[in-house]
Length: 424
Figure 1 (cartoon, rainbow, N blue to C red):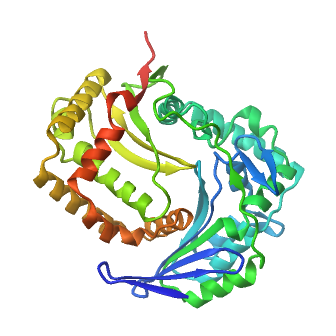
Figure 2 (cartoon, rainbow, N blue to C red):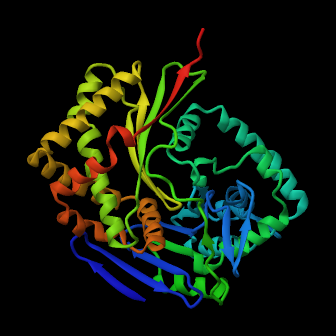
Figure 3 (cartoon, helix red, strand yellow):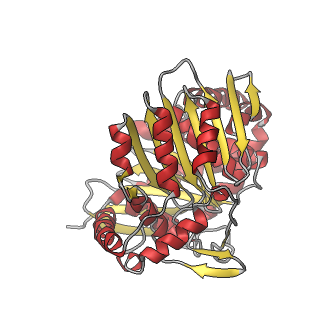
C-alpha cells in the first residue's frame, strides 16, 4: 500500500489500487473506537446512455436509484438486517453521479465490511421483486413530487440545463420505472458495479491490510470495461430558461437561484476550482457576509437561506436560496452586490479572513468520518485527493475569487426557481 503523510493536518492516507481496478483509500484512526466504510460506484441517475463494447445503450430514467433499492436483497435474506444485527448503522444514497453504500460501527467492523462487499457485488433480482419495488418507488416518486424543496430544486435544474439528464429526477418517473425489468438491473449492475468503476473508502480504527484482503478475496478478480457516458449535446453555458414559477401549498415563497459552471479538468485543477468557488460564495453569502447580515436584518431572508457548490455527472453548478417574502428584492440586492464587487473588487482583509475561515471549516470536517470517506471517494473518481486542499488554499489569490465571481455570477448567467403559495 502507498502511504502518504499529511503532516500539516496530522493525517495519514493509505492507498491501494487492486488488479481489478478498484481504488481503496484508508485513513487509520486507531485512537477512536468506531469506523466508517463506503463502497461507491461511479454511477448515478444521469448515467442513462452509455457506450460499452463499441455500442451505445439507452436505459430508462431511474435505474441507478432502483438498483440502490434492490441491492440489499440477497438469496439468504436482506443485507440491511444482517448489518444492523451485527451492530452497524447502514444506509445508501443515489445522486445524479454516484451510488454509495455505507455503514458505521464500533464492533464487528471486518464482518460488516465483508457483508458490504458481498451484497454490493452480488446481483440478485427476480421479476416478482422488481414488480413489487416498482410500486414502492412509485409511491416515493409521488411523495417527492409533492415536496416543495424537491420541486424548487428540480425546476432550477431545468432552468440551467437543456440536455443534461441532471435536469431529471434521480428516481425517474412512474412511466420510466415501469420499463425497468430484472434484465435491466442485471445488465446495469454488470456494467457499472464492476470494481474498475468503483471506490472503497474506510476511515477509523481498522486493520488496513484486512480491508485490502477482504476486497481481494470477495470482489471479482478481473478488471471490467469502464463505460463511456453520454450526457447529451454540449450546454450553452447560460440558462435554458431564466425563470420558472410554480404554486404549491407552502406558507411562504421559496426560491433557489444559481448558475452553471464549466468544470475544470480533473485533478488538482478541479480541486482548486472547487476551493475558489467555496471561498467566493462564502465571501458573498456566508453567515457573516454583509449581504447576508443586511438582508437578514431587513427580513428579506431567514435562517433557511443557504448556498452550495455542486459537481456531478459532468456538470458544475452553484445554488443559493431559502424562504423570502420578496424574492425580487433579494435578487436585486444580490445582483447589486455582484456589480459592486466587479466594479470595486473584494476587500483584501475580508478575503484573508474568509480564507482562514474556509481552512478552519475544512479542518473541522475531518472530524466527520463519513464526510472524509465520501470526499475520498469523490476525489478518486475525479483524480484528486481532498487532503491536498489544505495546501491549495494557500495558493488561492483574491484575483482567483474575483475572476470566479465575474465569470459565474453575472445576472445573465443566473436562473431562478420560485414556489409561491397557492393564490386564493
